[in-house]
Length: 146
Length: 69
Image (cartoon, rainbow over all chains, first blue to last red; front, side, top):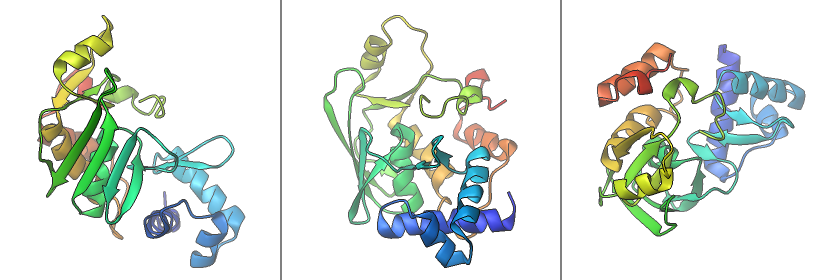
C-alpha cells in the first residue's frame, strides 16, 4: 500500500463520515484527480490489504468499524445513526469519531434489546459481555462471518 | 463478535459448541479505543501484524486464541 493508495483510503473514509454513505468512484476521483477506474482498482488493492471490504462486484461493504449496509448494530454518534459490522466495531465508531455514543443491538441469544451508552469511550452499564467465536488468526479468513 | 446480556446467555447460545473468548464490554471498549481510535486520522497508516498484536497484548488479551499468527 503506497501513499497514493492511502490517499484514496483516507478520502473514502472522510467522505463516508461526511455524507453518511459510501462515496462513488467518481466522487473520490474528482477529489483526487483520478479516473473512476483508478479509484476502483485502488479500492481492490485496499480490500486485499484489509483496509476496507468489498464484495465480488466491487461494492464496498465495510469501512471498518463502519458498515456500509444495515446490520443489527446501530450506533448513534455525532448526530447521525451508523451501522457497525459487529459488537467490537460498534464501540469502534465512537472511538474513531471521538464522541459519546448510544449503541442499540440485541442479545445474540435471547434477542432482548440492549442499549449501551458510552461516555468518554467507556460503557455506562458494564454488565453485558462480548463473545468472540473465531480465533484471531482466522479473523480474516471470512471477515463477514467473523 | 456478538454482544450478550450475560455469560449465561453466551453459554445458552453456544448450545454445546466450543466457546471462543468472552470479555466484559468494558474490556471491549478499551480494545476498541486502542484499535479504532486513529481510524479517521489523516496520518493513518496500516498497522503491521506485530503492531496489532501489541495492542491485544497491552489490553491483556494474550494466549493462543488472541494470536494473530
